[in-house]
Image 1 (tube, one colour):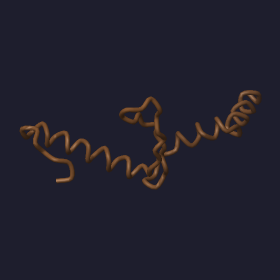
Image 2 (cartoon, rainbow, N blue to C red; image 1 turned 30 degrees about the vertical axis):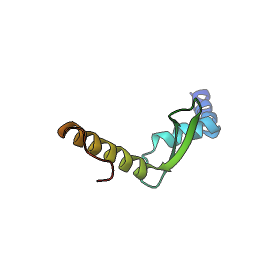
Image 3 (cartoon, rainbow, N blue to C red; image 1 turned 90 degrees about the horizontal axis):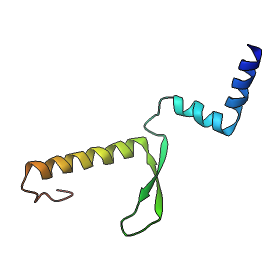
Image 4 (cartoon, one colour; image 1 turned 45 degrees about the vertical axis):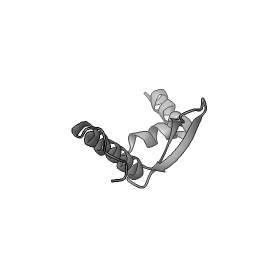
Length: 80
C-alpha cells in the first residue's frame, strides 16, 4: 500500500504528473490554451494560443456562420 502511494506521489511531482493533475482541474475562462493549427497552403502547423473563452467565442461564431450559410442561398458574408 505504501509503495502505491509513494509511486503516486512521484508521478504527481514530475512534470507529466503536474500536467495530468492540471488537466483534471476545471478550466477557467482565463486559462490559456495553445493549439497547433494547419495553415492553408503550408505543411507546417502554426501554434496559436488564446484563452479558453476566446476559443469558445471563435467556435460559436463559426457555428453561427455555418448555420447562416445553410439557411440562406450561400451568400452570407463573414462579419455581417
